[in-house]
Amino acid sequence: MEASFYNDLDASWAHAWQLLVRGVNDRHHGFHTIQLATVGRDGTPQVRSVILRAVEPQSTTLRFHTDARAEKILEMEAQPTVAFHAYDVRAKLQLRLKGEAQVHADDALTEQAWAESRPMSRTCYRMEPGPGTLLDAPDAYQPGSTVDVPPGGTDAGYAQFRAVVVQVTQLEWLYLAAAGHRRARWTRQGTQWSGRWLAP
Image (cartoon, rainbow, N blue to C red; front, side, top):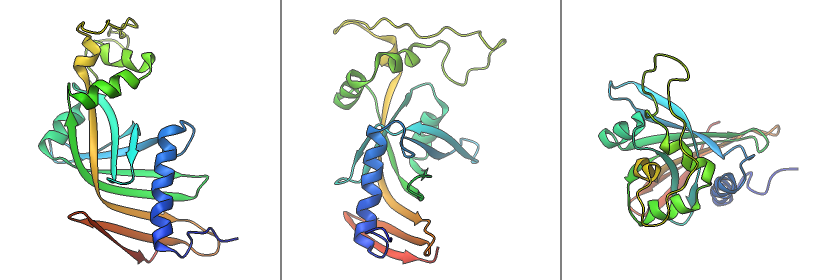
């Protein structure tokens, strides 16, 4: 039986965003951990996995969190255009997205995101030295403290915490079906989106 979105461009668009939202809320979903691509400071492509923390279908934005000391922060500051890749084997669906990243530090968004983070997640931002630092031994680092600083105090973890919001400007969708694959691309111009079918 064909999926309801199989030959419907608008329904395919809605289905893609529904699955992205599900990826935020279900850590077992294929879209919970997605791949982020940036341009390295040496001009080469860099790819790593990030956890999808928020999705807003109406504004077509995604959010993930990272450490201020991570290389990707410098990469996004130099070149804010980023790309994502996501694949859900159960849904047989691949998404490729492009967008413009905005890094948030110590503002209302980061305060709320930090407060909503699990205590175990917050410990990662208190680790010393920062991620990617060269070590003389595999255990030559200090794990982050599990003690949260009371409101009004200075938390070393929060000082390193960054929320990155990406305004999506292009979404490409590929659905793998036995009856015949379907592929489409939507592009944002200003505030308007337009989509077209593509050969799979």
